[in-house]
Amino acid sequence: MGFFETRAYVPAKFAPTETGLLHHDRSECLTRHAHREAFAAVILRGGYLEAGDRGRINVGPGDVILHGPYESHQDHMTASGAGVLILPWPEEKCWSPLGTVPDPDKLVRLAERDIEGATRMLADEVAIRELPPMDWPDILARDLRDNPGVELRKWTETIGIRPETVSRGFRRAFGVSPQSFQAKVRLLQALPRIRRGEKLAQVATECGFADQAHLSRHFRILTGGTPRAWRS
Image 1 (cartoon, rainbow, N blue to C red):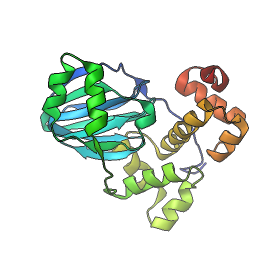
Image 2 (image 1 turned 135 degrees about the vertical axis):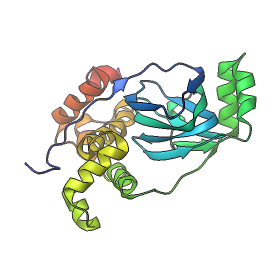
Image 3 (image 1 turned 90 degrees about the vertical axis):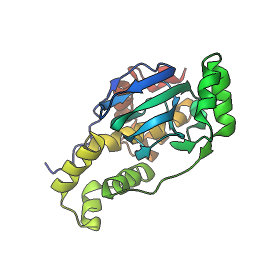
């Protein structure tokens, strides 16, 4: 069996989504984990590198990371650590992972007395932006998201990197194999379509699964239930 022939989804551990202020220690590393709820992380001080299902992002004060439900990520804090404000966030507004706000301290002052009001203020003031890929692992992550049917071995041949190097380097960058990353982003792309009531067989085919049963197996691993039960 070749390096990229197995397409198994390895679920990340679920972590609670607690709103309010969080403090991360200097050079702290958070292993890959997921949250069931959508949320926004407003960086107040320090910074970190986040490697998630939508790529790697270097963030500092004033930056905002918008996480969709069930998304996975790992985080590596800078030598100064990081202070973060966690706010609930509507999942339908997670079309981009990154934004900025002009005055994060104003959000903190409002959040101390009104969390929902702080979320509304963030929605009014956040400016969405995109960052270019940093290196080939980011390019591969982008290609896997944009094209669920991309064949990993052909991708390595096109870019001129050995499959073994791609497998090791991608896992080092994202904390997960390219195969598992590919399976996860397919699931994330399927979720809103399942919720809208689209036919499961069509969703499975267009999101890169072998068939509806293949989609349902991976869906159960992620959510603990079937697509039909989750939708209803």
